Amino acid sequence: MKAGADRSLGSVIDDADALPQMRAHRSRTRLILAPTLFVLGVCGWSLIETPAELDPPLGHMGIAALAIAKILWVAMGVAAVRGVRRAQWLFSFLCGLSLVAIVPGLPVELNQSVWVFSQSLIECLLKAGALLALGFSRASRASRSGGMAVAAWNVVGESPSDTVEQR
Image (cartoon, rainbow, N blue to C red; front, side):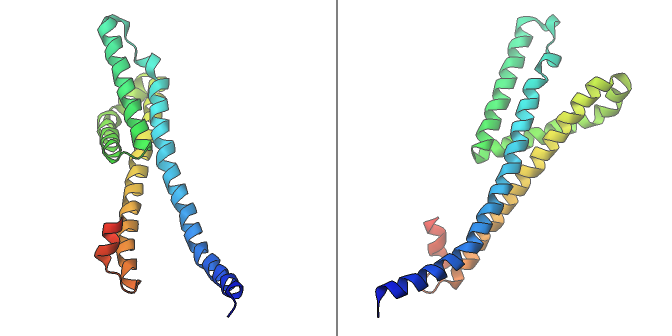
């Protein structure tokens, strides 16, 4: 038997098997993109609205506190985008906490100032999107890891515990 004939047939079979994996990889890329965009959007909007949050009567301490808060918020967002799970959990928690604090005041802001209302509404939409996108990405990651353990049952001579230990 010629080795070249086997390789070409094996290559065709390997390419056919790789096609669903490439499609799955593309869908994972799309899923990862949404949380990244929302987290960066929240961080960017936080920086954009900084001038509106400056309060000169608070003095230097108020400005320093605002600067530290913005730096921490952006650093946590960057860590979340880079895949640090604790940062993702903390970012999600703070987005949810912020929504609980801001949403009840939206009707009052609408009656007082449309400009302030629109800023708060954009902030709420971005934070709600980030919260949902991070939650869905964690849920899909958990389902994929659970799916790998189930797929290990189909591999001959390998137990699911061996596959989990290799990860």
